[in-house]
Length: 194
Length: 363
Image 1 (cartoon, helix red, strand yellow):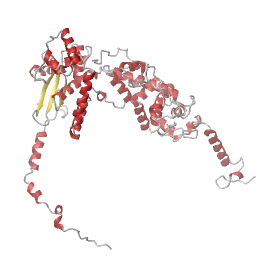
Image 2 (cartoon, chains in turn green, cyan; image 1 turned 90 degrees about the vertical axis):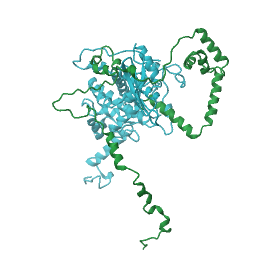
Image 3 (cartoon, chains in turn blue, green; image 1 turned 135 degrees about the vertical axis):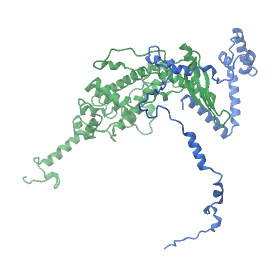
Image 4 (cartoon, one colour; image 1 turned 120 degrees about the vertical axis):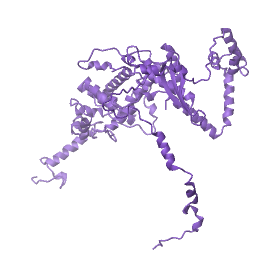
């Protein structure tokens, strides 16, 4: 029969995790479980929406849940177009007061002539290294998007740019590469509304 | 020989033709021999099968649909090549009915749905994967090997050999010019004309002796059941069966969208419909300077809010807002949508034309 008590090979004191730790009892004073719990709970105590509450006895109440799609998108012969309440229209009167997503609205000038466009194409085709999209946009006072709409880059320039990109990417470590890939995936998830 | 000799106790050679047990055994052996020469169970076996009767009752099939036809729907063309005994003709009919009922439901319920989303929704409702799942829910088991002696309640088909490339089993039968050029660009609208109801290239039937995949065999079976109901019990029963088994499955159409540039599409839409140009405005925000900010952006056309979205960057919130506005446009449903086949019902109200407008935004 085997002995019921086996002696540890190492003395007890060299295994500090078996002893009750001193640090735990010290740190107890620093963590405020109870009070922070109560505070969190208080903040989460939001009055529920009227649609979810019990119906009030003897008192009429109107619950207005707006339609899922904008009333503007309803066709002219749809009866739901007329059901739009006045309160909804009144609530959005301050659209002009809301801040814009963009700091400055681009000013549209419409100042370029067909000759200018020809000039842009010629410059970009003949000397693509000097005349990039951004330098052309600065020179002609338009957006880089307009330059891209007017003319594409030459195949040689595209090949050079591809090599440059590959050289830059070859210096990326695993962390940066992964972060870039994750960002791309997140960007794609926007379009699927995930 | 006068002496009575039971089959179970003694040997068979001693038995006479007057002996009932021996005769039963002989008849059974004879029957089995005749059954073995057929590739699928004989018609008489249908009434003997408990599985088949149970399936008939479980699916609540109309009593006018006989068990013999139900047995035939379970025999795939790869198991029995005789068109009088396999389910190929029934499946062709059922396939057309399914495609018709589903497409009219989708088009009348969501008249503005983009074509690619319609194809995806069609695939989700009546694609082979869904039909195979339905047949599994119905409790259909596969016969290991098809044959005349098999219980007719099993699904009978010949499997493809392991390692076969499934795409190459059936030849391309598309009428599209240069259909074998896989890398060429195919417009979505050309798929209406050349391709099948899911927007995939039309394939011919599988060559004899090649076998089919389980998914294909199961999908063919479900289609054949609908075809059989249509033939034996008529249109209303087929429509009811379709509504109970296919349309009752929940499909969230709004999850099938995938936009690449929603803001641009929305701008095009507003220009086309003569709405004011959409403007993105910050409705509320929190923690702009923190690590995890939240922005709520609304897209307004004049005084009307078209959509709202939230995100951890202004660009994300704007894209999501534009996307919700576009979904609001695409997922418009008329009040009480009716489908053309509802006119076949008795006492149907006069037909009012379904809603049609420009629908999809083309950039």
